[in-house]
Length: 318
Image (cartoon, rainbow, N blue to C red):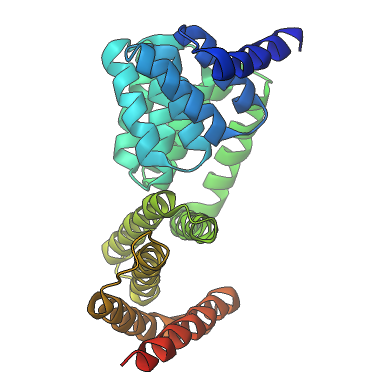
C-alpha cells in the first residue's frame, strides 16, 4: 500500500513538474491500475513505459493482459506476439497462454491449441496448461485429445483446484457423448458472439468507436466460425447468418455514430443514407430469425426505432 501511494504521488508530481523517465516506474503504476480493474488507465501507463523502452517485455505482457481483460483480443495478440518474439520463455511461457486464450475467445481453436502446446513445451509440469489445452481440444471437437489432457492435468495436480475442475469436465464430456458436446461447442460460440456484441454496444454508448469496432469484428468472426461448424455437421445456418447480419448492423451503426459525432460540421448525407438503407436490409434479414430469442428480438426492435428516427431526420433535410 505504501509503495502504491508513493508511485501514484510520483506520477502526480512528474505530471506537474516533469516527466517520469523510467519505464519500470510506468510499468509499476500500470500494475496498480490493473489491480484495481482500471484497465484503460493501466494501458496508458504501460504504453508510456514502452515509449521509453519498446522492448520491455514486462510492459508488453501486462498491456496485452489489460487488453485481454477488456476483450480486445486482437490488440492483446499483437502485444503477446512481441513478447514471444523478444522472450519466448518469459514467465514460463505466459504470453503463449494468454495468446492462446485470446485465440480461444475468437473461436480460433487450432491456433489456441498450438500456443497451449508451446507453453507446455516450456513448462511441461504445469497442470493448468494441460487443462487449458483440453478445453481448446474440446471446443475443437477433438474429444480423445481433450480426454488425455484432462487426465494429465489430474495426474499432475492430484487433488488441487485444476484437477478438480478437469475431473468434472472429463466426467461431463464422457457422459454427454459426441452430440451433446457438439451442442456445447455451438453454445460457446453463440455466447462469445453475444459477449462481443454486448461490449460493442457499451462502447458505442461511451463513444469509444475504435473499441467498438474491434468487438464488432470479433463478433463477425465468431458468427463465421459458427456457420462453418454448423455446415460441417449438416445443420441449419439460418440463426448464424442472422447473427452475422446483426453484427454488420452494429458495424454500420458504429460508423454512423462516429460520423455524426465527428468534429466536422459537414456530413456526407449520401453516405449516411446508404448506411441506414443497408442497416435496414441487414435487420430485415436478421430479425425474423430471432423470434425465439426475446432479448435479441428486443435489440432488433430498438435498433429499428433508432433507424426510423434517423430516417425521419434525413427526410426533413431533403
